[in-house]
Image (cartoon, rainbow, N blue to C red; front, side):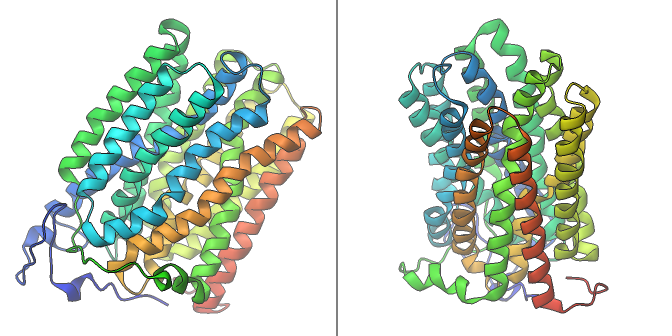
Length: 435
């Protein structure tokens, strides 16, 4: 089952600040290609690098805070600050989606650039728990959300047949950000200190978001509409949307658990501290092809088909490698390295493929912002609670990690189940169909 992409019927081209519509389409504005479409991909890539790429570095802070500024607090308490980052990143989409549909991306990008950079600068001078909570947990990710959501929504308006590939390229920015930021911070924190490490990160983000502000635009002229409750509730009357929400939430319950805890577990198991610090970099580097390749093959073989395969691989890697490997050979560095590589590749599909799946089941692209906001708000709850639940399990088990590994694996298996249910609803039981 496929959905007609309604952009072509609108016959309008919009930039981020334009309220002009043209009945004659410029060749540069064509769907699935053209200079403007790929320029938007570049700008959206910068947004994902700065937004989700920064969130992918939260594992560095879990370990750093436990050993420095917040060493009086439990790992679960610290993880609440860090879990707020993906929560706010996704949850704010409920409002941002409506603003995007009504007014376009221009002001969202400008405000988001300021808030994200300002939050990081305030984090750099924070010393108390509440200060980290406000600056790093709320202000910075709120700004990141203001650039993250419009980047994905704008990309959706420019692509149809190559949409999963476009989202894969865009989301590869989050992978590279997840490589650059942890590597940079692991080098800078011991040498120049916490404050300037955060400030340098903020300046890099500012430079890239300037590029995003100049390049990210929607192909659709924004259409102001009154706020109606039905816009937020009607998607839940669609079975494919409900199943997509359930599958995505289960996946995000699990997704950040290894990112947050693999470094800590490796260090406690006696792995060299420097090597353990690079596990997050290895994980995010491996997710780079995990973002792009599933998108490429998803457009050819079916996006739901590829997503089911990638989630199944994630579940296998957690339950058949991470769990037994660290129980039977806790000091084996090879297990941690191989796990980080395989899990990074397998879980990489979530960021790029979920928006592509949403676009596939959405009948009206002019409402993609609201629908994306509803989906990401549901995901935000899983992102917020997944790691603290894992932290609570860890505390209950006297700092042994098998319980949180089982939790992550079980949630990933549930994600596979709901993605499969959505595919069956859309196309039946035939495994040969492209869905």
